[in-house]
Image (tube, rainbow, N blue to C red; front, side, top):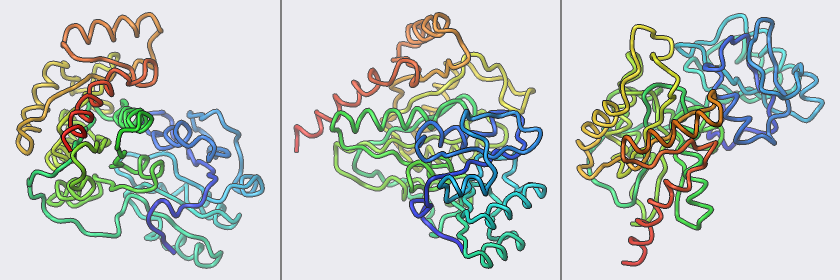
Length: 348
């Protein structure tokens, strides 16, 4: 049995970490812990797992007894395949009374033993990466409303967190805004969205247009970025998302300590100046007025003193607002967007 949308997934969760050895591949787990913490009852780790969410370790049976109703796969192996040695653990979760939710490219429903067990135990399988609808080819037609897209110098450095922080701050100020999820973690957090990297390439831009339709003049869609134009494996999905989103505003996300593309040591991280110029040139294909409003740094592995100095120096060098969304917040970014919102609403 399968279900969609992600809003149908029953909370609370047992977050499955498998035997992942690097936090880089556990973005879903950390995203759920940070943005829906009350829904994460515990974690399930296999021998060799080097990641810890800081929540109780539990077996599926223990989690069900504690109130969990869904085991969520919180890690994403390269390529999105389901490792065979995870299957017994997933079967145990079904037997314990838990539904399963996954953001992997490989569908749970396509694994015969899992599908059969779900039927036998009356459990539901949620393959959130796979939409139950089709998308058109991108039209490039200008839409009403405002859009902000987060982009990055690499993958896994804060595009989702930045977008969530900006959307939350806009909403807190009473500004009409929506967070638009484009990956499995964002979809699990928001309960809706489109996993852009699971869309057939010809329809990526069209999916982005569908995700962020025409809206009121002062409305902001804050769109979660994916991949990076500088990533040798994932640049294509980034480009399609840029063209379909038609962003009015862009925020560049960057990790100051990262020197090479994650998992691709032969590819250096570009300079911020190169990244700004490249993104802007390509974004202006579908929105000639696209511009950068800020840089968002991920300084989580830096001391407070070093982080503050890096944020100040970067903003001064580039002539842009510069923040760390978690350390400093995004008020400075939203101050800029609020001015546009007030200008738009005043003319209605």
